[in-house]
Image (cartoon, rainbow, N blue to C red):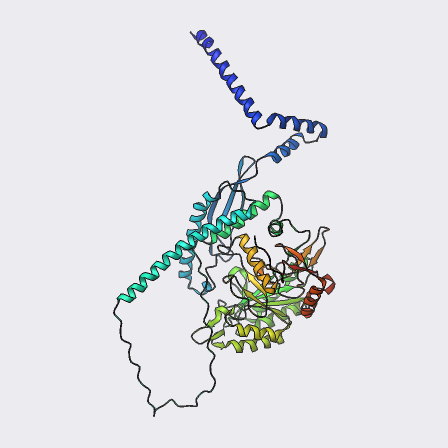
Length: 577
């Protein structure tokens, strides 16, 4: 019985094998496998590599299909401030295998006044934003970017921006309907007659002399740009895709971004050196002083290792002085920044000067400072003045004189960030005329990227937050450099030019954690070339700019080390991605 079954199965198996052989031959022919095998074997015999299998692996890797995005994964994380944030992870099919290529997270700032909200309300709003972002990444964005080329940043960002715009318009329609319903409800309610105001007694008028001074009306604050819940998913995914593409191409992220701006990466790049926030005496600090949100160190140009060592020694000396001179001592604020209880802005600056003297550093020569005033957060609209310290109010004009006196007393301060609100245009111009070249004015445009240019501003702070994609970041920076201010990364800091021969030349400014647009004219900040592009300028134009910032350029580096390239470009408008 079994012999008969075996005999009967013989022809069937032969037919199956013949069918499979024919199918296999057709499959190999269609995919060109015999030609590829023949070619690699011939090359292998000619080259005779020591690692035969490694040679074959590299050969077939080059022939593999380009990587494609397979899926996205979002998860909740905590940022450097201990606040809830979102992280996007990108998975790609590489050599027929799914791999985790990168992950990224952008700052999830809920707005310029988020820091002033009470903790409970702020935590609830943040949780709502993160839940929406998590749903976007793991839901619609995952399907929209599936099988997309991670190296096509422009196309990916276009998809992300289109998705965000659709959600934004939906939210806008909902709010418009709610507004219309509220207006209809108010119209349907009966009008309440206004309460008559008592007429003042002419005989019993107010005592005292009449004031002849007329208070200037305070320009109203511009409405903040709305932050859509979940918007940080857009920026996180865009950055994660950029990091994945840089990893696939085997280049650093800064070179990949430079290639996005310039089609090909420039031969010379200005790599930034990090600055350090030495002290925070802002609105959330334990003391009465609210004006100095950040006191930022601008170190002397030099090797990175020496700069970090010098900064650590200076911080240790500052902590020692604070702990010895105060009962409470130094505490750590958001992001690990030291905070101290001070009442006057001169106190933290005196502290830094004392620490510099103890470390053998010369303020104004080896060490410079930038002050992030964050003045828009200090405006008391009921009184129309800035509350620079608890109970200490100053009008915008008074603040101009205050900054002039402070900079005159501390020449090591070479930059002011947000000394006024954007609405106080006259005061920006007055302060710029008073300071001339002694101090650079910077403006934070993170939440007002489309705001009009302010007079006297030599740089802009631009943080990578919310729905801002990598393409948007490059585009906005290009627009601001077209306003005559140039561009730089984050607030203000030294940068270096790293050439192919390994030499480093100081140039430009950077501070980690965000990006800024605007050549600030800060110490040693000759118009540089950055990771977002480079372009040469004429000698005459470069000489005029160096003459304008003569004092500042002589502070941190010699005139001979100043390059003739601008950070992106400052005078001519730039095209966007």
